[in-house]
Amino acid sequence: MPDSLPWTCKDILDATGADLLSGKGENLFSAIATDSRKDLQGALFVALKGENHDGHDFLEKALAAGCAGILMEKTRWHEVRYLFRDKTASVFGVENTLKALGQLARHRLSLCGSKVLAVTGSNGKTSTKEMLGCIFRTAGPCLVTEGNFNNEIGLPLTLFRLKPHDKWAILELGMNHPGEMERLSAICQPDMAIITRIAPAHLEGLGSVEGVARAKGEILCHMKKGSRLLINGSDPNSERIPLKEGIETLRFGRHADCDYSMENLNCHAKGSSFTLHIKNASPLAIHLNVPGAMMAENAMAAAAAALIAGIPEDMVQEGLASFRGFSGRFQPLATETGFIIINDTYNANPDSMEAALTQTVRMADRGRSFAVLGSMGELGKDAAALHRHVGALAAQKGIHALYVCGPHGKDFAEGARSAGMKNIVCEDKDRLAAMIFPELKPSDRVLVKGSRSMTMESVVDQLLQAARTAQGK
Image 1 (cartoon, rainbow, N blue to C red):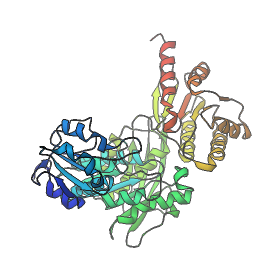
Image 2 (image 1 turned 180 degrees about the vertical axis):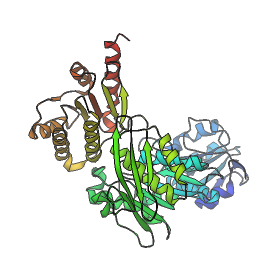
Image 3 (image 1 turned 90 degrees about the horizontal axis):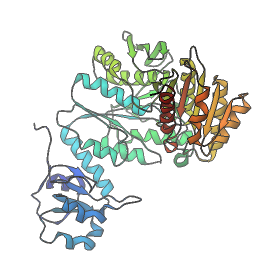
Image 4 (image 1 turned 60 degrees about the vertical axis):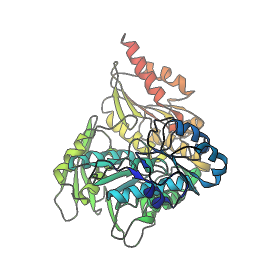
């Protein structure tokens, strides 16, 4: 079987039910594309309509870039048909191009016959997905979601990279409104799914933790009977997920009654280790080269899924040991002056804030723990209270000094002050690094964390530069 499969006009028509508006039905398409700025030679260009851009406005540009076909909304044909006079490009018309994009991805998946392992959850889904990739690649070819291509556009673009020899597709699924996960489930129809954790995230769109659980549970909608679902047995909110008859639900967690449980967890600055206990099987020693109890929990979920998929134990161990983490996810960074920055700037919600604060204090065995926190987004009407809660947690867990910024910086500060913390600074983000740097000693650790919209990585960059400058570098 060839390494990649070209798309035929019949594939497009069968997958989407489109009408052939122009051209002959004999063209082959080398790829599916949605960006008219890219090289489209031989590709099928799908004209997507978004909040800020409409692909139908770029059809002429797509033709000039060499596309061999266009997939567009048929109601727009009368506006653009003049573009296709004397053109050989095939033009397909559908009701909704975003839906058709998903149908094309589903068609490619069915042609390749790969099994699907989908990962979602309020926290830890990207790390878990990357750990799974490290494990499954030791056993053979597989597809793994790149970056955060996890929505109704990113998922199809990921599946278009699927090769016939990929035995598994490891897919990350994300959403922030009801109904989105159901549509993602319809596209990939998972054979196995992991829901890492349910926490207060995207509350503006989902309303409550119960709403988060219901929305994440939509992943079950298009899973077949006999499929397996892994949920977090030590997360009480995960019990709110509406389960589905005919799908086997297994639990991973820190409690002994889970199907996959953790014992002897040992976290240190450079990594962690634990014993994975498996019901009706021998325990398995797991070693990670990334720190943090949350990373260990993610590894437990990844190991459980891999074992269920039939990956040998030694490959599970080897794959997890090869995982080195990635930028912005509880990433320790050494500085020239000796203090450690914990770069956890990728995103934040109250649950991940608590986990990061806890682990930062645990790691600071000799020095002090500082935290630089940016506001958390999409928390709806409870935003102020949840920021006060995180501020109080920082004080209760032993953070020496708290530096906060953003729209809810004062709420962080109020919560910390109410819990007895004295060392609190609430300032503009761009001033925080200069204010905290003179206070830091060689053995200290500084957690930097906030929602994606806060771009807290700029604070990390400023602290690193300040340390280099202090050492004359």
